[in-house]
Length: 364
Image (cartoon, rainbow, N blue to C red; front, side, top):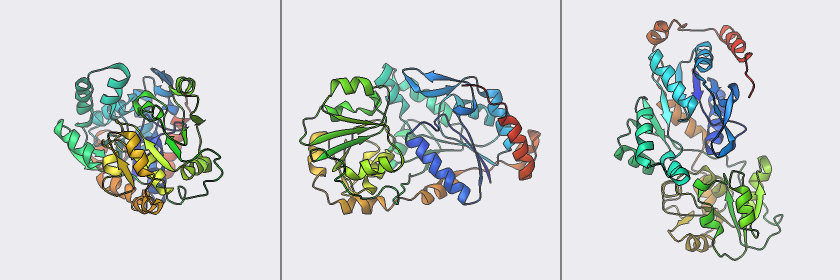
């Protein structure tokens, strides 16, 4: 199947959405599917307000249509609700193509935390965006229930996965810091509620791995915290494994892939009892959820690392990919004919046409 994925979040960004898409696409390709990702790197871009590391596509409609038509997709998935997601939605509606979307970030709470925008306004816009789809893919039952109560439909379950070969228990002694080591991994941004962790008086050490708009300010405000910056590949896996507890202070994530990565490394999780942690940790015994985050941390330190690893082994990227495939809605041949596109395109011709379109890469 030729699968078109449209995402405003893509490499070199490092976050749960990008990691999930990268892993799922790799699995799709192993299964023999042809995948095209339309992402900001293919367009002129501008920096996101207050978050310059994220680039937003500028007037992407015509080029997105050209890329999509050249690819001649048999199914379309819109991964994000940014400029590309909205243009992808408009493209599909104009063509009469069914498409699926995914709800991966609680933008109403994010926008409220950053700019005090009333959540009701954001939810109204998101409801209009998602309800035009053939299925809204969500990672947890908590988020499904919340969106259903707000009038979102149809909602489809789509879990996440973790690479348990990559993230695994390893030697802790290389990280020469006072124990216990309390670790946070993720964007260093206000919506992640990191200061709820950094303000705590804890024995041992606090380590923050990641980058973002709050990094400089938090470094200055908390000089005793070890800010490791952005880490990738084996370094990131080693940081996870070196920790004694993983602290997840966010109240706005829909899932929290980093929790699974920590658990796979045999590290228990401490978090608030909110969507994301409630679904990933639940009553598994692999972490502790408490409105008093310090109390959750102290209790989590007593958890057997083997229980954490066992819980993470229940998740796989293949299962995640199979679930997504089951939710995709094939584009009827009649719709493609009506759009003047070939119903069956030979791979060489399609690839040649796609290369011609990609040759017109604009500067960033």
